[in-house]
Amino acid sequence: MRSLRISTAVALVSLLISGAASAAEPKSLGQFRDWEAFVASDGGGKVCYAVSSPKKSEGKYSKRDPVLLMIARRPADKVYDEASAIAGYQYQKGSRPEFRVGKRRFVAEGAGEVAWPRKKDNRKLVNAMRGGATLELLGTSARGTRTVDEFSLRGVTAALKATARACPSR
Image 1 (cartoon, rainbow, N blue to C red):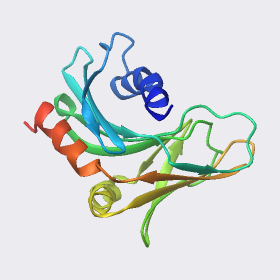
Image 2 (spheres, one colour):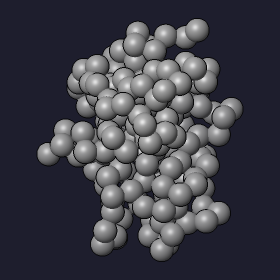
Image 3 (tube, rainbow, N blue to C red):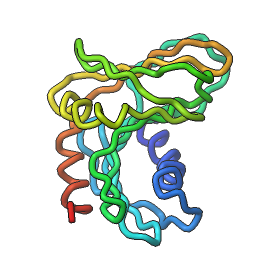
Image 4 (cartoon, rainbow, N blue to C red):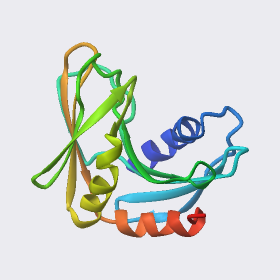
């Protein structure tokens, strides 16, 4: 079920990352414990990303789309290991989603369904993920529903190595 949710959302992720409707079907680079790595082409070059779905989700909601945590590489845009999350709902306007790894907290920017750490915190968050066990994503939906999604970080380092090999730095 978990891999089905991830594979169902992979096409959406490719479109979000590339911003192009012509993105090629993503190809799996492998499953790495609780993470999977993919590569796709968006016309401007390769796009690679590691993605995971939550192990546990809390919140009183009646309907919610798939929730994903991902780390993307877009060498043509000089973007390497950019973290983001898809909440499965529209964030409340003005709300500040938050990533937590252990005792470290990273305030995020939220727009639509997507949250990403502040630019100055991205590298710190990804490094914390490499050394952490779990990540919590806290958010508030447009309807005011507070959610907490817990992701396992088992396999994230191996998944990031796979994306770095497929989409190396220029």
